[in-house]
Image (tube, rainbow, N blue to C red; front, side, top):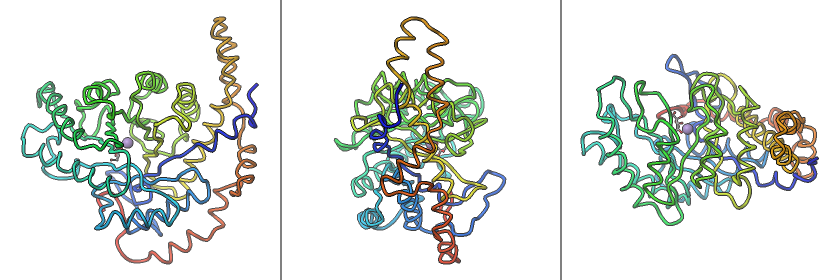
Length: 388
Ligand code: PSV
Ligand code: MN
């Protein structure tokens, strides 16, 4: 039996990066709904993120998206974030919203377009130097819609060349993190569709190139925890983009659609050494709150990750190993399920209180008056959203 007391110290290692874009307006191609109190500036996004961290102590960093979060002075932005009690985290590049990227960016047939995309990443690295960020995360919209439209092999070769140039610029303490996604916006093929492609490209680059696993970027039914096992085994699991999906890249609150899947993923993270002070795996959210309130949406998200981490830590690994060794199929499965079915919420409430945090951060937010304050203060101006 593993007790909550025996794992409670390990819970303090939990650090989940919040995406700045989760606080802005978002939606689908059908409609983006505005929400009262939505930030108009990156500073306001940081303030909202800091509120999540203040109430949970789970979210010490905020990931930025360039150009959505462009400012004149990144040193000043870094100080601003630090004053709020958070740090600036991963820098996400964006080569999917300019007209010139219609047929690709780092894979584009035209050298001039590739150059522009590479230069954009150089700019991101320059920003990282000022924000103190470790990770440059690259997600590409590159791909084709029709068989024969592009030279799949040529695109892969150009991708390797472009990434090599970017990798050259990465500082000794920085990492290039390559995300994969099996479809969308391209529907016939994408140039980095799966972990294997990302792994192959990263392996060719070197040690500081690692894979980003976005949980929403797999076909339904994919055994994501197996991918976690494999990447940890290969030393290439760089980061997670956590979210939940029923169908595809739904970007819903992590742990909402399938908490058991989140538990299985986190169990393999813990078992594979991806959690704790010696691990370099970054845990990020990549979510949008289209219809639900955004700040409580982020609070719920980090709490969901914490709950499933606690359950994953509760797995009696010794007993599980013994059952596995004895080929005790149902016994082994039962040990895993015992941990999953353990309701850790009361123990976590106590854990928070013992650390001077609100037992129920959702409730604490509702009672804090912060929402009313930002709705009043942030009247007028242009609300942040995709592309702003
Ligand atoms: C698009 O699918 C996407 O959601 C990727 O997952 C990136 O991580 C994110 O946008 C930010 O660019
Ligand atoms: Mn992502």
